[in-house]
Amino acid sequence: MPMSSQASNNFDELESRYRADLEAEHLGRYALMHDGEVVAIFDDKIEAFDAGRAKFGAGCFSFHEIGARPVHIGAMASAMT
Image (cartoon, rainbow, N blue to C red; front, side, top):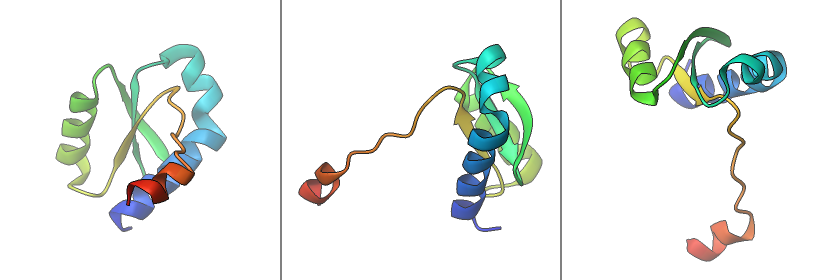
């Protein structure tokens, strides 16, 4: 699965299947994900990245801050380009 698809699919799964439970117990931590599954939880994004790279290889995983919401900049995106 391409890196962009891995990250996008993992984020969709995080939001639809895991968000409520993870926010209740792990708010502000990082979920390491692979193929739509939460593999591990980390306190630090560097630890999550290093563990994902070691276990799955570059581009074959993603990690997401638990409780963080996507930032939408809307019209500002066109103004800045």
